[in-house]
Image 1 (cartoon, rainbow, N blue to C red):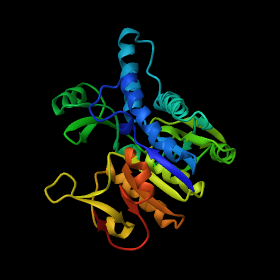
Image 2: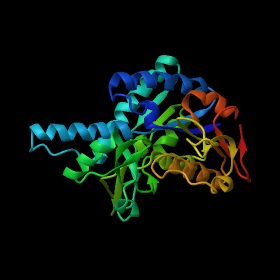
Image 3: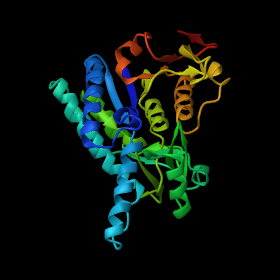
Image 4: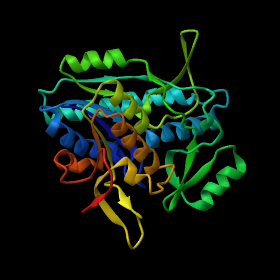
Length: 309
């Protein structure tokens, strides 16, 4: 079975956790164990997030400029490509440490976007560390940066346009056919605009779940899985919250999910199911083997209605 796995940046660095290489390494070691356990039986493409990682690089760029004003911060497309190497390297290394017989390839991947996408007028993509409301207000008062609530914290938001195409699709397919577990489209891919057959970087971050869905379509995947904190819930965080075992695009359309977190994930899994290529699922990284058996997470299929645990 050909499976596209979307691995959340927050699964690599837990919410509120210090953005250290050591913490990221510890989480990736756990991630690698879950992914390696199914890699021998399936064709796997991993699309990882980069919200915390690219945000950290942005903060470091800004801090460096205070000491060297002539050193302007690197643009977001370049920072995004750096996270592809950083996270891809750690994943690739730890996957081989679990099973050195695995063939693994990390590919820095460009994703085409449109400069006229309406997302540039309404930033919603969370990047970087978490802040208190008071600290976020202080930063916004003295800079053009924008922050929005993310749970009980605040985080910076940047534009997140829709992915149009994946430039290195042919290379990903070639690597898969050669027996590789492929790590591609990291952070949603490096955002580029293509005009007159020339590619240029764009200042934004693409939602990795939407890019992963597009990749799943173009690769004719059998299953598309978003690995995050857990399942889809009805009325999450409220007294009557309920965990969904199986859902459909029609059933999920009756609920409203946060635009900056679960909303794009729901949109992505529903979009893939509606293409008729296969099923989707959302669940915890550490339940990956159970998700494949519909024993954990939320399976999204065609049809109507919702089944709860």
